[in-house]
Amino acid sequence: MPDELSSHRWEPPANFMALDAEHSGWDASGVVVLPIPYDATTSWSPGTRFGPAAILEASRYVEWYDEELDREPVDVGICTLPSVDMSRAGPETAIRELRALYDDLLEVAGDRLVIGLGGEHSITSAPATAWIDRLAGDLSILQFDAHSDLRDEYHGTPWNHACVMRRILDHADSGPGLAGAGIVAVGIRSLTSEDRDVIRDRGVTTVFAHEMKSDDWVERAMEGLSDNVYVTFDVDFFDPGMMSATGTPEPGGGTWRDAMALLAPVFATRNVVGADVVELAPRRGEESSAFAAAKLAYKMIGFWTEGRAGT
Image (cartoon, rainbow, N blue to C red):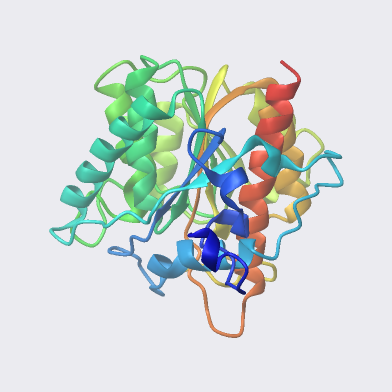
């Protein structure tokens, strides 16, 4: 902005946390936020294409200071890229183009943490497969979710959001494989019998929602993770009492404290290479879900920053 205009009142920039240029420029940022407003295959209630904008808007009201970490994680610098213009030529084309974008983005991002804001869950296959190939399979995927997402196809396409983890498994199996248990899924409480067969046959470590009452569920999840981890967080992991603005809410979900109980040690003891927050479908009059999703993304940035400070 020209200096002659800077004295006037302006709305905060459309960046994550409404950060100013000092905290959001590419060169000075350790974190990159990528909005991906994609909503082509949602099963019940559409609207995830509005999720990234709602998260960015809500993030303006998240306090910079994190009392748990006793720091302001924004100091790492958070660069918000423009929203991705997803292809309308069908889900396979859209995901293929998103994968090409991630390949280019990761090439220039260096050691920055890239956090994708969805958008439906199918977008996760792009960054996850990109990291599988970059690390020659030395990677595990930590999936927070109500659904196993292991269908081979759904509603006529294998690129449906209900198939995303199956596509990731298939990509890994056709190439370098995955380290550790491959996929570690927590909070699952909606799946088909065929999904259960895939879990058993392919050794997917799964902590079902009803098992999170035990004292050792975090330890079980941690044991399945390799040194390098990609975190995908479908917000329907949370119980609908906390997170109702999502396309396919399921009763009996996890709490905020459940999520933090696992995320904190993962970021502290593993090399988290990337992350996403997906499946927010904002609804008018129910803004608390968008705020929770924004706070979730910021907590992951804080944990990542804390982990870097400790190395």
